[in-house]
Length: 287
Ligand SMILES: Cc1cc2nc3c(=O)[nH]c(=O)nc-3n(C[C@H](O)[C@H](O)[C@H](O)COP(=O)(O)O)c2cc1C
Image 1 (tube, helix red, strand yellow):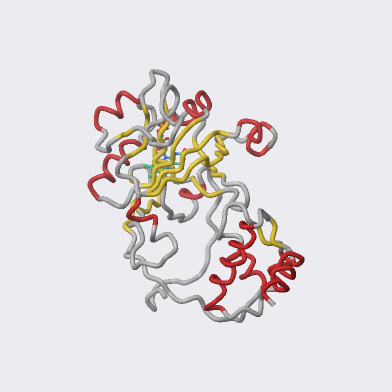
Image 2 (cartoon, helix red, strand yellow):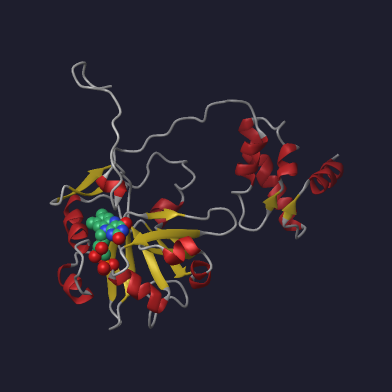
């Protein structure tokens, strides 16, 4: 709430180009995108407009860039890039800001780079056109440009910005963080924030406060909850919505365990779709 003497009314903010930072507040994290320049050297470009795009069945990512960036030219040429996510580090923010200054060559950026670029350990992910990755990152997404689906989509194809629809081939997470993805620990990576370029002379950054967790409110078991939970457990086995509807009677504390059991049974039988018939057969077997 604002102090008593500060106005609290909404006023219109006219749309301008790059409206997310020229007409409004938009704070988020960003990716450092590595891609290979025409001399074979890995380039680093920071991108805030960089989000999960398809999250069910397909794993894809959207990057929105000025069309003349090194990253766009490199990714269109080689189809490959890596999205590197680094933790907040005040000293490294200066380098990131400098990387974001348009018009620099990769050689110019390499001269002051304070990050460590290393080869990817993923098989087939080194060699011509394959970007190095940032050693300090807490995670890296290795991606391939989806040229066909961009060409097939007029919004992506005809935009005055470059919209890079990237299929995520591999997600690499530092081992120290991998076991904490499920929220079982007390820590999350210290994600850096940016609010972008504002006022012609400044670029805004922020530091995330330490993460904390809250228990999920108990609003009763809904099939949507079962469905969401069930389809996150395995990369192959999928639950149909009807199957999820038959599982709403499971008490919350046991849900995960029961769903994991069903996935195990499905895998043991080579079943990839859990539907009501499969559940009925399982029930019958277990009496
Ligand atoms: C934190 C940060 C986030 C940025 N996000 C974007 C973005 O989402 N889209 C964009 O076109 N430029 C963005 N920029 C500016 C680009 O980094 C800039 O165009 C830079 O020249 C890109 O590097 P590259 O040409 O080597 O790809 C951002 C800059 C910074 C510092």
